[in-house]
Image 1: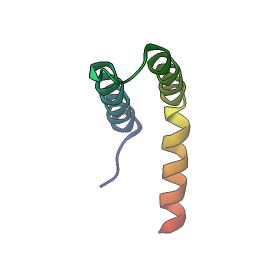
Image 2 (image 1 turned 120 degrees about the vertical axis):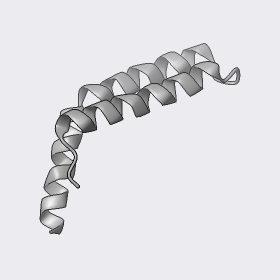
Image 3 (image 1 turned 180 degrees about the vertical axis):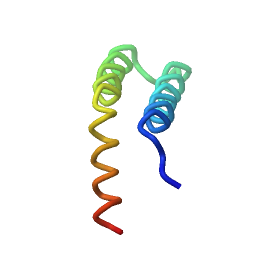
Length: 63
């Protein structure tokens, strides 16, 4: 079963949001580290179409 880019984007965004939520709820995570990780995760989210394309290319080569 192949995942569309929209499905991938929604699942990927949800996964990144779950990571942020877990970090926000953890009292051991310092504010500065939380901010840094938020910036990194935001950049990862921005490149979602690139990740999808790479995964699609890898799947095509595998078959």
